[in-house]
Amino acid sequence: MTEKEIALRAVDALKNKYPDSLCSLNAENPLQLIIATRLSAQCTDARVNLVTPALFEKYKTVEDFASADVADVEEIIHSCGFFRAKAKDIVEMSKKMISDFGGNVPDNIDDLTSLPGVGRKTANLIMGDVYGKPAVVADTHLIRISNLLGLVSTKDPYKVEMKLRELLPPEESNDFCHRCVLHGRDTCISGRPKCNECVMNSFCRYSLKK
Image (cartoon, rainbow, N blue to C red):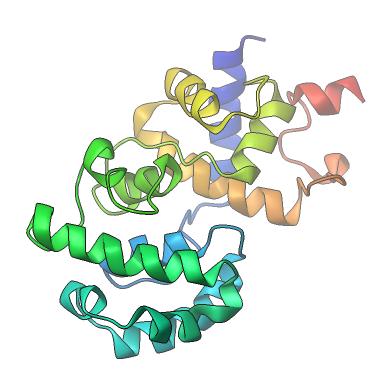
């Protein structure tokens, strides 16, 4: 079976198991989503979702964040880890959105990654979830599952993204990434995958090798 065939079967299998492929970060608008995604680095989405209600209640607009006291933001997001760098990035990215993009969250990868603290993972999430464009969010779950399936043989996020852009139908790529996160949490768990329960065990190269 070719990599393309495995990819298409994986898309169908995960779509059947997880018909609702929603982002697990709670956000009501693009600004909240890009901030929540920045907070999620080296932190669980569940923890971020506990922190953001207070943050978004106090700071409602990009102007609010741009003029925020970094120390105050640090205090609110402290439990997310790396809070100093994250707080600084949130304030600085808000300032840049105002100065360079009319106060809006950019709608392309290059502009998004020009924002402080925004890498390709965050940029792809915004592209897919906010703007409905083909996107590949190369997080740890997607990287691990793609390697186990035999779609890629690298842990480099950029290389994984580029390879999956070749293999996945563009209209399915963003949802596939969300579904891999769900699957990675409840079945294909790091270090202890439940292959006997997996909906992809009939074509996953790791499972077949076992």
